[in-house]
Amino acid sequence: MATTTLRPRLGPRALVRASGGSRYAVALVVDALGTGLLRPFLLLYGVTVLRLSAPVTGIAMTAGVVGGLVCVPGVGRWLDGGARSTVVAASMLVRVVGVALLLAAPAGHVGMFAAAALFLGAGNQTWPAAHAALVATVAHGRERDAALAGARALRNAGLGAGALLATVCLAGGTSALRALAALTGLACLVAAVLAWSVRLRAQPGAAPAEDRTDGPAPRMGVLLAANVVYVFCLNVPEIALPLILVTQAHASPVWSAAIFVANTVLVVTLQVPVTVLLSRFSRRTVLALAGVVLAVSYLGFLAASSLGHGWSAPAVAAVSVVCTLGEIVYAGSATALVTVLAPAHELGRALARFQLSTGFGLAVSPAVVTALAARGPAALWGSLAAATLVSASAVAGEKDRGGGASSVTDARGGRT
Image (cartoon, rainbow, N blue to C red):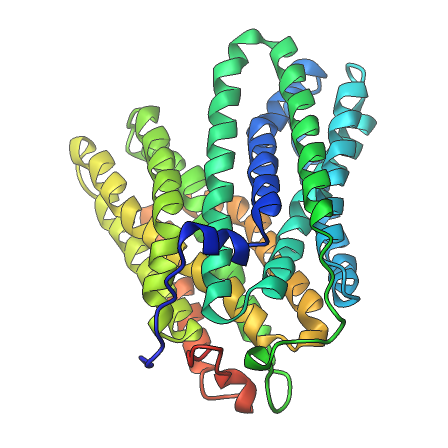
């Protein structure tokens, strides 16, 4: 329900301060650029430079993601000990090790590529929890929500720019891929130094008055389970839509590329304004709304796929805007809700569990999407819409449960 919360009005400088300061903001940009240089082309590096088979390369990359998720609980405990900028820097440094292994790996050496994928996966999987904990330490209430949203927009911009630069450089062949890997390692090293230089720690268990909760710690099992379903939306532009457009609508791959670019641009430009606009509502209500918007977009994709070949692709592109808005609303409320619900002494572990649910959803979504798509558009989009609506209902249904912790009031009077 609506509250009397005032929307935070953060200018660029205030937003940077709330996000960890100027050096940390630069670290985020450099790290995102570096990650964007290589992450989309890691499979190509294994196949082209190291001359591994595509199945072996894919298995090694998957193992790296799983191995990275295994590291997340330990990071949560490290964060609960008070560490902040050190953990962020460490998540960047392990990627430097991964890149070094890539560059040192001889052709045909599966073990070194797998080790590199493991270090890169560990860095990618542990960074979100470490970053969210750092932001939650320097910003509070709705300013924290805006800061988290701003960092996501900044990171998306960096990833997009890095991927675009890498695409341009691919004409150089294997030597260009090696150069991209080296630039990635250098960028991660610079970012790690900048993040470490912030030197931010938190007193274990300390929390500002406006973020403290009364009563027992809330159970977040429903939120974590719902997040597994919600996170499918992040892979819709990259996996589901290209699959549907190319294999079923027989549309040009240009449509898929255009949708992906539009998704990135919308996230970069709208993430902060939409998050601030919706700050008058409780975070839980906004998260439930995100599920409804996503479900509507999935039903829109179902309707668009039934149109003729000449109309299907433009209709899918139009509906993708709605899906992106749902993604923006989800991203602006989910992590913020976790940071408010979690007791101060368990913030790191709560964020780690949330990252595990996110990583699990991202890991299984390609297999689920491709399996459902093989059964037709109705099976794919109908199942996604139904599961997302059930998740949204579960999130909304938790509003009045769990005592005082579920209705915590932040600094501006807004409720979780």
